[in-house]
Length: 67
Image (cartoon, rainbow, N blue to C red; front, side, top):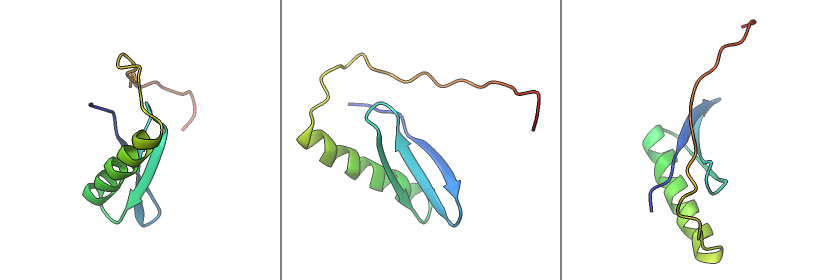
């Protein structure tokens, strides 16, 4: 299965989140965060199988009037 990973920096760590499943992990660099997210997601799916194959996140951008 293919899922979305959203990765962002939080302090000295990188946080990786999978919006379709709700799993989150972290690492010292982006690659480690992504690898940890993959492992966390696989472990989660072993316990709670994901049956809705059509669930996909939609990622877009938007503007605000203030910074």
